[in-house]
Amino acid sequence: MSRAVLSSPALRSIVPCALLFALTAAPAAAQAPRRGGLWADAGVGYGRFRLTCTTCASVAAAGGTEVTITVGGAPTANVLLGVQAQAWSSSGSGTSQQVRSLTAIVQWYPWPAGGLFVRAGTGVVQGPVAPRTDGVQPATIQGTGVGLDFGVGYDLPVSEHFGVTVQAATHIAALGDLLVNGQVANDVIAYVARLGVAIVLR
Image (cartoon, rainbow, N blue to C red; front, top):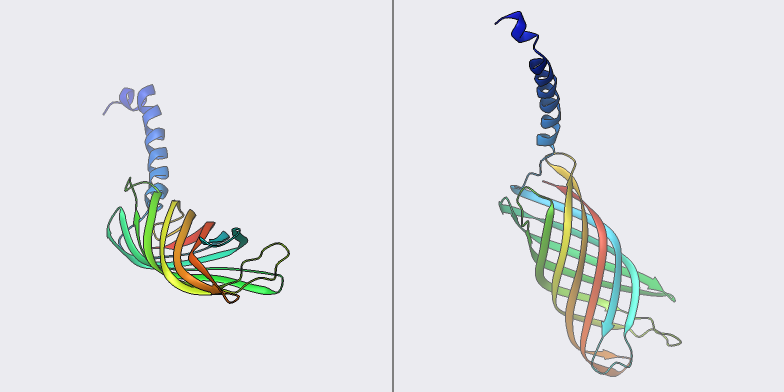
C-alpha cells in the first residue's frame, strides 16, 4: 500500500472514528439488558392507600412506605414471569396500618432491546388496616381478598446483570364484607398506588 493512500485525509479521519466507535461500543454492549434465566428486583417507594365500601360515608386514605420484592424467570427476551411480594405500611395516631399481597406477575417489554415494560398480575391480599378519619378514632379492618396489580416501569441497565428500575403501579383488592366496629362494611375495596425505585439482578 502506498504512502499516499496511508496519508490520505479520508483515511486519517476514518481511523480515529473507527477507534472511537470500538471504544464506545464495548461498554454499550456490556450494559445491554440481559433477560434470560432467573431474575429478581427489590424496590422501595411511596405508596398511597385508599379504602372504600358501598356503605361507607367517606373514603379513608393514608400515605406510607411501599416495599416490593419480585423473583422469577425469563422464558423470552421480552417476557418475564415471577412472583411479587408487596407490603405497604404506615402509622398515625398511634395506630399501625399495613396491607400485604402475594401476586403472580407477567412483565412485558414491547421492544425487547428497550427498557420500557408493562407489569400485570393477580394474587392474594391480606392485612389489618386502620384507616384514619377526621375526628374519629381509627377503626380496625382486617380481611383477605383477591387483588389485581397493574404497572409500568423503565429499566436503566448499569451492567449486563445489574440495573435500576423506576416503577409506578396500582394494586386493587376486593376484600368483601368486613366487620368495622361492630358494623358490617359491604364490598370493601382497597387501593394502593405506588411510585418507587428498584434494584434489578439478572
